[in-house]
Image 1 (spheres, chains in turn yellow, blue):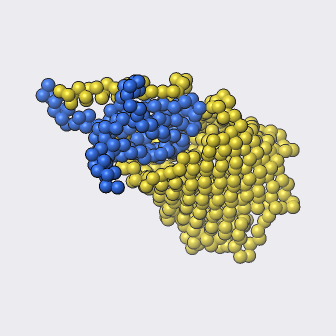
Image 2 (cartoon, rainbow over the protein chains, first blue to last red; image 1 turned 90 degrees about the vertical axis):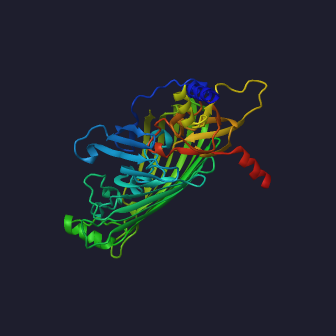
Image 3 (spheres, helix red, strand yellow; image 1 turned 30 degrees about the horizontal axis):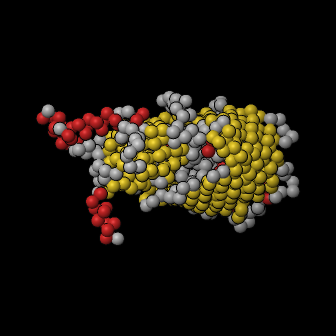
Length: 374
Length: 138
């Protein structure tokens, strides 16, 4: 009888989470069946007209088949309008996977997944990073948002050491170019050619409060449309984030190596008539410091930040190809993020972008953004 | 009654073992150990906590960003599920006692972003007697 009483007592209490003690304010916001985030920007490059852009409208779906089998989906409309060409907007299925949660250290995931490289690609909700636009390094060196179809394993081993290893569709080297590196080579899970598979992974240490340290890799033969080439792409990346009291620091380094880049340029020139001048190595890094000027929680929550970025999509050229200085760029981004609510970020920044070229004009841009998560 | 006894027997003395206390320790009771956990996209810190059987603790949760959830998954499904308020909105305290040794998973139960399913941890519950012997040996 005592056992039954204990059981009943336990379940009655468990059914009423209000029993927990709280020093919290009652939650004023409610979440519906969907989650998501939005990104609304105003960009004003010096000497050019300003532009209003509803950059991202993203909905996330989450369903549990059971406590151990789950589905996550992420559907995104970019630039508010889809016409068929990327500049006019995109409708993207960025995530759609099933997670089989077997144990803390070993789980299986399959479907459309984010490539686990860098700070931003897996952690890109507007309130979690400073700056209206994502860092340049996370755009042209690590081509976020980078997603592909595949399968793999993930988990946490030891105290705070996490890993993920996925097999995914490779990049298409025939789409690489000088300006944006490997970015246009993403197959995006759309009838992706998997003559070869790519392998990617990340190890991340989160065992010390406030500190996250990560390292990632990607390796895969990307020459499936030109099988005589061996355009294998290797990416190595390392990053760290640290937060203590009012101070927030983050840094990232990424390098891309493209094998057989000389012959790849010849092959693309043979197809299009123009040499894309693809490099054999691309490199980028950035460091950012933020300081919480107001730290009382919203609505008195304001971060001032400055970020230095250096990125070169022609860091090393194949023999016989000219390195162009306009692709060796650096940027200083300075601004502020104000949080009227922890899930709403009102952002302002000034970007001073410079290249090593004496001919190509440098640009300064003022950006204002409103992003939110729900 | 026989059926109820069987159910109780099958599940064990709260064999799933998780007991959430109804109220904070009133004056006069010994103060419980506080275990502080912070939640941030997409990790709990610390993500592994240790208890001994029957130990009464307060799990104090706060968020460094959005609202998260804290759910303890027992052998029979969900047993504790509570919302962690957003950054700057205070902390939530969950009184907890687990009577059966074992490893229990906890996880974020509120969709918090692309890496939501990475946000997990574990509670390792050691047998009180065995733990005392271990300590004595040391």
